[in-house]
Picture 1 (cartoon, rainbow, N blue to C red):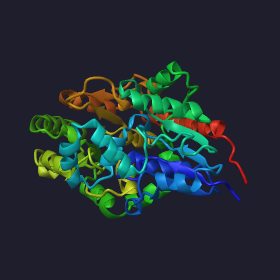
Picture 2 (spheres, helix red, strand yellow; picture 1 turned 90 degrees about the vertical axis):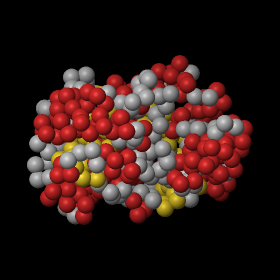
Picture 3 (cartoon, one colour; picture 1 turned 120 degrees about the horizontal axis):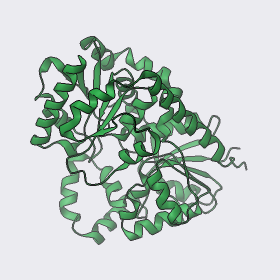
Length: 399
């Protein structure tokens, strides 16, 4: 009988990229006995995701078996237990929890451990303490800010990665940090690079119905797929965004569709998008309400280009050979995961990022990218991920 394969990641909450990762991994592992693992029991199937099983329970049931654990992607190397536990709570309850516990490190760590059932500082990173007989694999994970993380988290992550059978990371910044710590990691693209190749038919089907099809009817000359996290929600920033987006849409003769790339706490909010929409001419803007994974993919795939703060908005646009531009948050101080990924995989010939007040000019430049060049990057990244996954994945054990 096939050894169980646990696909582990933060797809136990609603975040665009995290919901994609287990689909990609499952598509590359036909015939495997798969268990979808998160930190909590959740059912994201109504959003196109998976039903997840809590890692603590799986460790109790399967920890002494020779299972295979694949960390399927995401910025998991720096995700602290406190933040992970908060993002699994109902959004309305988070402010009170933060007010009560944020200033008390010991208490908040105790609450996180009790909530997750795991005594871990980096709970999405599994080592041999939980699964002593497992094959441990990291397939395109990230940890750009690892060197700035709390020392206990850093030590735990380095220990777990040192025990792993394979460590593939998605950006050179994370790679350099792990090499400096003695971890023999290798570089591979983000798993979502395979979105178009593996799920193009599903996404095209979603484009023909529902809210996505209505967008095509409303904006027959095309639309920009635009997304911003709640970090952009202050009035001054929204005023600037509205002016810049209006200028770019007028220059490109297309509509603006505002969507969310995640509804978990600290991700995107409908309120922020509606406030932005109210600052734009009603005839030029639409708030996209669907949180269904394949609807969001179809919105991006059918767009004239993507603009926003989401790394995976960018990566899915890349996979479909669409122009893309990431906008830096107003509080931006140093390169984050989007910039690290861009620096690792994209040639510096097109504008890739912009501050809020320069969005219009750079977005119009990005939209003028040569289609053949965009297709070349899409194909190269998909091929690189597929080959790297196949080459570095240890063979599945059989009982």
